[in-house]
Image (cartoon, rainbow, N blue to C red; front, side, top):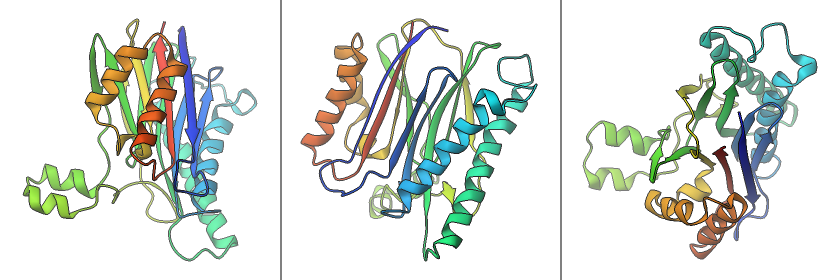
Length: 250
């Protein structure tokens, strides 16, 4: 699979520390955005633990006979991805106990893994970090936020009730609380598709329509696309950390 990729992560204009961690590993065909929660030496540690768990699990020296480049059932792929979450959860629990952290420490995640034998992109997430797919002039949000806001919309709550709920109240993540399994989906790639992964520091301040306009304008220069997304977030105040990965199928 041939693809082009660009990314950036930025502290924003308000926060003192960047709690986001990004993984771009073209050798492993593995891409992650993790948005940490809990503050300095909490959220940034949790997001780094998560990224390390995925990278270690898929690194060649830790790969068993059953790997994602051999013909194995997709359920095996899902088990392996979820095992990364379990490992990260255990390590975050241990870190919280060691540092005697009072309160929540955790991270969201959105990721892409290319499975070579099936020529399939696996999209997985927990929390409100998002994945989008640009295809033939249209942009589709391919993940649904795990949030109180989305739950209320599904339950047909009134707009007034929905507006009272903060959009950033998430219902699933990875950390020193209940363990959750990933939500996983599959996409067969097409030439000129563009996947966009981002933290809520981007999606909270950029509408889907605005992201589509930027992708159409800068789809031939992914580095500039990421910069222009950052610039748009900055014009809106950039109150949160922001991270984005853009991957174009070649």
